[in-house]
Image 1 (spheres, rainbow, N blue to C red):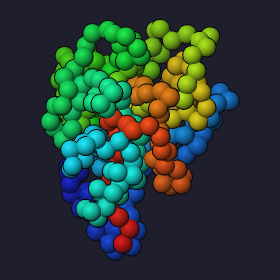
Image 2: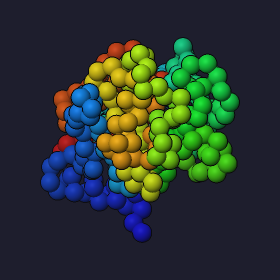
Image 3: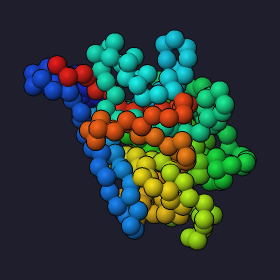
Length: 252
């Protein structure tokens, strides 16, 4: 089987020959479900260079999509998609489990706690060589998959096709929210941000009932932001902790 590195080299060669950036299979689009507005970006981890970002080479947190793009530009690359990727402390360190380039920065937090993160079951988004998966935290601890990148957040939005048991259909807690869902075989990854305030129940349903994804994870609310150049969109605001993104060669 062709490795991701070989596919990336092919994509780079293609971009040189055609004079275009290899945007791979990242597709972002605005969509509506149950009368609510969302933006969804679909990623194929078999070919897309999907990564997590926390600290810049300077040792400071990246914090913004523009900071990541500036660093990548020095390598002849660019950020073709980005989204905040999990809750963080005041110093923007990850609240839960965090792995970047195979190095564990923060351990798994398996127990309940305050806030949305501790609303169990929560979960972990795990990026491997040719797939990416949302995995419930205790299942992740039992399996300990070999993740190149991983970020823990919560609550789970969809668990094996079912909405989180504590979501209320008549909840009045409404925020801009963002999350990620994955297919059973790990080859389809969809990141979604609401373009208006939504409840957890409404947000979970777009993953389960519209996108037909069996597992989905809440990444954050109110600080939610999206970088989608193909939509001429790059949100700016509060400085972020973990960020997830797709990297591609710059235009030539």
